[in-house]
Image (cartoon, rainbow, N blue to C red):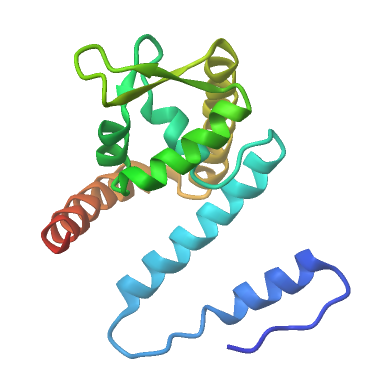
Length: 168
């Protein structure tokens, strides 16, 4: 893939993203489009999350925690389909930032649970507000077909998740 040269990072990024639309193989349009849409949507979200001080993945971890109570590291890892070590590293940063706290597991002293702090609950509300705005932006161009697209994406999600779980 060629990377366009530009004086500003955002112009260069946009140009290189545009080049990614060139399909490398015939017959993989669905997979290619899903990968591109996922990449572009995540990039859009990360640009917006950065403005509120949230890094990649932290939004998902914060969302995985209950508003009242706590959840074990392995439970968060299962919910996010990542390794517990990934959750632990990310949790350390969120604890440092005062958004979550580590609390003892109620019945197993060897385990740690994670809980949102009041600042974490407020940050979660900011994240949700941001996501609602992105949802509006993205669905605005879809019109009446949005519900049908969401239904199709739900089926694709279930299919991909099922295949992923078999591999892990």
